[in-house]
Image 1 (tube, rainbow, N blue to C red):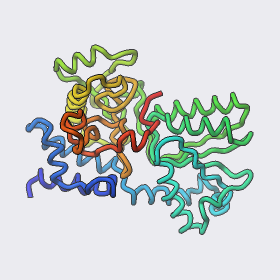
Image 2 (cartoon, one colour):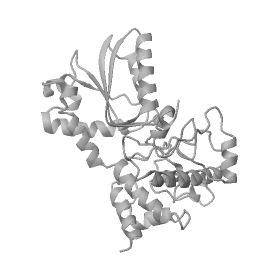
Image 3 (tube, helix red, strand yellow):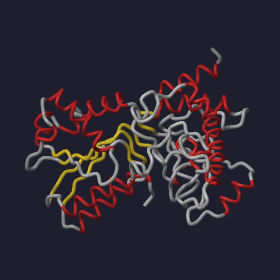
Image 4 (cartoon, helix red, strand yellow):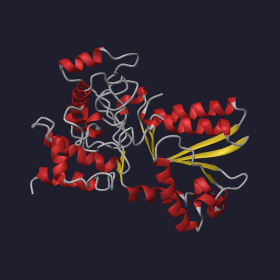
Length: 348
């Protein structure tokens, strides 16, 4: 097999359980159709880098269940009496929008039954900790909104709350935890808040040169891109310095990272052009309120966040030929808003 064929097959295999049951299983032909939308000279380099990145940031159902299963025995969280902690803990089911918490609670409940013989829905006792489960914190909007409502309406006067996720983005984690502590204080409640995550992805502006999201170091000389950048509002793009050393090695190299930043930026501008009046938060590198987009590369088996580059998820091969969605073929087609509205996709 050629290198190209190997890469097509590898990407399809990495994402094999993506939206399983909702979409056809990924195949090399599917990946081929997606990559053919880019210039012939960059297709192979993009495949190389995407193969590397997805191996770091695509989370399968098996991996996610294994992660949450391991947290059940995390003594820094539970203390020595693991079964006792979970029998007293309140596993919150308070997500206002989306299905991620429902799915994570199901996986967690299966592991809790297997390891401790406990029924998740039967857990909870006075004085027990409260546990908020979810997959990833992006902007922090979802966890902030869910827990804000809970703190005001249902939380006891004093509570320990553990937010347990696969990964967070540092800006969203900081903003949401700060807000929640302020909400608790305003409600006259004493809140001890802990966030547990396997990885913390750097995306704060002050640390953009060591960030771990797609954050351009340069911008191509292109009229459509120049026009888009000229109309940016309060938070325009501030370029990162190339060559920084991120703590988490998501990209194979800075050269590979810059390739994705450049090509996904240009593709995102093109995609925006398909829409008559695109929203201001629909930015080329992902929904956001700043720069050219959020730039996340994290994808779970459930869905691709729209905080990821438009080039990865935008479009629908079944859309009518006159619909804007018909003009781009997605690698990781996102569940549509009619099916799931995800508050963490938006930068509040």
